[in-house]
Image (cartoon, rainbow, N blue to C red; front, side, top):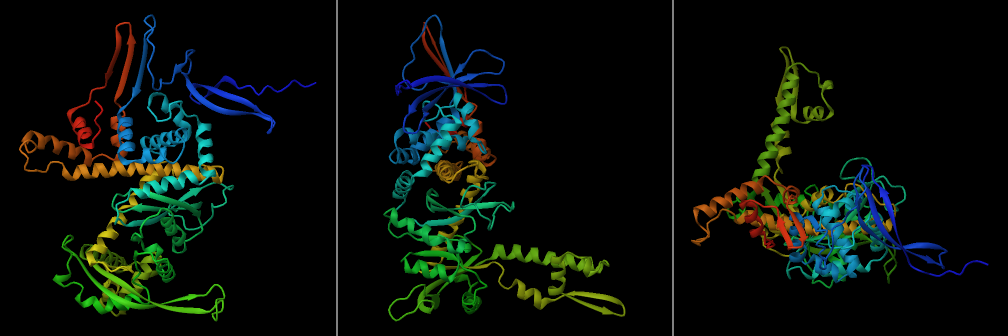
Length: 576
């Protein structure tokens, strides 16, 4: 007769040897599950590590609570605090920690925040490295994270949408009332053959791999990410905007201005946004069959002094309103209208035309240098057939080549070059919302700065490859990267603001002393040479040592120089 199953919870230890010889010691809690027919792991806790060649375990740092002093065996701990103090401040000041704790149970929220802080402090760091790194770094999750726990966490988050949507709503509620929302996309390459939405399409990294697409919503004023949506890699930008923008309704937001780049420009998208009553601002394409004729009408007056930007000398702008016919094909029968029938709708659209004289000068110089280079090669005796394909096109379009008795005569075709350079430096913004010309430009320029978020996300958060075996784990991984992006953008914004006010007189005698301005100038010069990662790495050298002896508790920290103290003071990190 089989022994009766007790259902008892069993706690045991197991060792995991790393490639470098270190041995990590874990405590795991097991219980037999009669419904599944096997023993399942309830939890796992990292106790410490045994260094390679050693026999004694180095325990992971104690979390919270008071330490019982043993006078015979003094207890000592050492932990790295510099970068972690900064990230703890970021989480509190930005509201990210509070929003996540309100969106998930405390344990899950602390695990997500721990992974996000690890990625923020370790550019390109992979999940397996978190096991060793957390031994001497403070993280919100007190019991320590193993590699398996991180993957289980990501699969759990990705398996349900409630945590993500609650967090998105909380972040959206912190937006200023009249802020605009930028929408942009990035592609993440993958080697996986098991993920359904990894498909071949346009790859922004150009590495030839299949990709997934991530559409992200940003607040243009705070530059904080609000939400994201994962899509198959073969879905082009031009048709992926509608569902992404619909997320805004789920957050209970007033209709914000949605700012888009030229990749989303199409008449179909414009009409869809109008039908959703969504205010939008997007970059138009001058090669369109309806925008270019409107530019021709205002081209003569675009560079008048009265149309110059008050904030950006060298940029001229003018606004025009047009009634445009939009055509779409009916997808279903309705009343007397049949499926497949072409429907025409007329809507008012505002076109904001701009001329950037600096960009015009740069593009013109680069183009004429290319033409001159090809001309010099032909004059030196090189045959047209020996040129590259691009150079052959330049020779064909912009050079006049004649064979004379004295030899080949080559000259630049002025008319062809002038036609090519006619629209250099000019661009157009399209909207259904009436704005001041340069207000529209300002909104779009804020959107352009969010491009940095994707570069930072890929560089810092191990987001160059998917590194996930299943769809749920991928979704959860993207969410953890999304939280980390919020940390990075908030800190990046505060440092950018600090740089804008350093070494500038304020008419406050206590501030405008030569000693103080000199110190601020030194800090500014240092910040101009540092990236976000380098700053965190610099402060990560600071440690705190605590020793409990029979004489009491003693604690000391690595000293820092005056410049670093000034940085922490202006940032707002007050821990001494």
